[in-house]
Every structure is written in C-alpha cells, then in structure tokens.
Image (cartoon, rainbow over all chains, first blue to last red):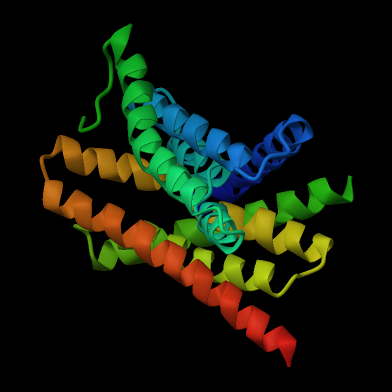
Length: 131
Length: 121
C-alpha cells in the first residue's frame, strides 16, 4: 500500500519536474543544464526541510510522509538526467562546463540539504535527522 | 496534454520501482544505501541508452523523463550523504559520493555509446 502512495506522489513529483524543466527551458537556451540543476537543488532543500520538520510528526500518516519524501521529492529530483547531461557536455567538448556541473551538483546538493534541514529545525525545534 | 499523461504514468511506475528496489536492498544490506546507488547507476545507464539511441519524443517522455527521472533520485542520495557526514562516517560518505558520480557518469557514457554503436549497424 505504501508503494501505491509512493507511486501517486511520484507522479506529481515527475510532473512538477517536467513543468519546471519546460518553464525554465523557455528562457534558458544555453548549453549548461540549468533546469535539472535548479530542480535537483530545490528538491534537496525540500527534502532537508521535510526530514527536519515533518518526519518526526506522528499526526501525519506514514503513507503521506513516505509519499511526499520518497515519492514526490524523490521523483522531482533526478540522477539519470544529471549523468547523461554531463556526458553530453563532454561530447560537445565543453569539459569546463561538465566539471562545473558536477561540482555545482556535488557541493550544491549537500549545502541545500543542510540549509533545508536547518530551516526546518530553526523555528519550532521539533524533529531531527536522527529522532 | 498527452505529454502530461506520458510523464505522469512513467513517474508513477518509476517511483514505485525505486521504492521496491530500495526496500529489498536495504533489507539485505542495511548499512550502506545500496538501494539508491543501484537505481541511480542502473537509471543512468538506461537513460544513456535511450538518448544515445535517439528514441522518439513520446517514448522518451514516458520512459526517460517520466520513468527514469522518477526511478533515479538526487535528493535522497544527497540526504543519505549528509546523514553520513552528521554521523562522522566520512569514509563511507566519500565512497558513496565517489561511486555515485564516477560510476553514474561512466555508465551513462556506456549506455549512450552502446546505443550509438547499435544504431549505426
């Protein structure tokens, strides 16, 4: 049953990613894969925040909690597009941009998870990464 | 409109498959996030294969943007890495990050190149 909840929320996450990719792709036409980077970093912040603020709450059904974190935020962000975009940059001979993309994802992802987590713990102080 | 249906259906299935693989693998190897690592590496190879094989747009929306996009995940991977850092498991974190990025990009390249070779024939 949890799997169905993950699927339902996963559908929403995938559609949000697609919508954002399309929207950002309307004004960004450069070689650098800005849409995936923005989606991934935003998702990292959201998952950090959710883990800190919502995960420990017992008034929210586990289906919803796993659905939103694993399903929606998990499907909103993506790793496969990141890998393929990196090799496409390398194929175009844009090695500098490829390195920049990997570093921005590597460091940015960690920073955005940490920032989200911090913002989730700051105001009410409930929850924790290891409750 | 049809694009929304394709991406939505792919996302639904991809998320369920990721959840099942993660559950199975975390039960077998509890201490290391092999579930996330497996879906990310497998998904990188398969998406590389699809893009290299120049799949038509509707198939790419369903299986690429929808399924592989949801099957693989970036946020959980990063959260797990940050948790390792918080637990002072720095070696494990380095291994996890190193393996994900190195093998992910290499496997995407392998899938992409293999599809290019296959379609040339």
